[in-house]
Length: 109
Image (cartoon, rainbow, N blue to C red; front, side):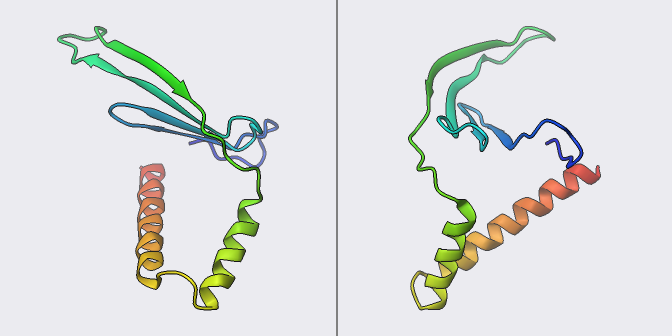
């Protein structure tokens, strides 16, 4: 993760690497905000430098171009009006906070 308000290159991108696929979220790309790569190790290496990878399809689902903060505010106001599942919202919020805490711990070393 690269964090700098001073960097002259405006980037809003995060890559999540899993066992079978990778997902790239690029908020600056209007046409392909999310790209899913079917790419993973083909077999475990027996020695250093022997990684063989399997490359499959690349998929970019259509994502509506709407302002995320506006959606969050609308969802919050709807929740305050009684819409939504309070337990699920709290559980999701807890997951986000725990993930952010882990990221911060990783950055702190």
